[in-house]
Length: 296
Image (cartoon, rainbow, N blue to C red):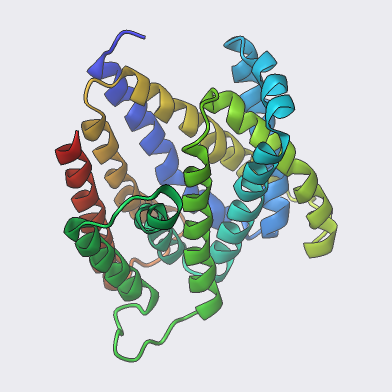
């Protein structure tokens, strides 16, 4: 593919715009569906969308090749994403204000740098340590709404689940580091293999009674734009990019736009601690970005 920074920026902004809306979509949909019901409908939607994309791109045959060559590897990936990761993330959103769940989830890149030490043999630099301290200080500010000394969490379980989701997402990408397959075909296979577990879990954790059209609309939207099209748009942006660092930095727009949408659409008040905490987290992530730029 011929490099084109303008096209890369356009596709990146499309992905960022999609991701900026999903926290609101999560919260609205959870008023009608349970987390597992939302995950079931969203996963089925993503499978349909990715199947259409792979068919259009002539990649459907790859799905069969990958599952024959590495069935247990892709099964493990599918259990992590979409099954466990999104179920835990949705449960966190169900227990916390959306701004808290979303902001805590943004620390996954910091979690990734920590897990890369034992799993990928990487070393933590001074910049990594500064980034870790900044990011988790920000997470603590958000989780306690600024009351650091009291350590009073509005929902300890919700905070724990949000942080656990970052661990699962980081693990998913560490496992993906050893995947040389096409990313879109691989993602489709992960969703196909994760779906049976989600179907089995639905009557255990909830039921199949989902009459509200608002829940269906929200879950379908999540399946299309959080799990499906945003991922494809981001990959396309990276393929076009002449400078990936400039593209990657655009993702930092998303949490702040998301806060505005949460306030405007569902009237969720923005806590001052969330803004402060997000600045800490984004600062940590930017330090990581500078480190990567210096290494290239």
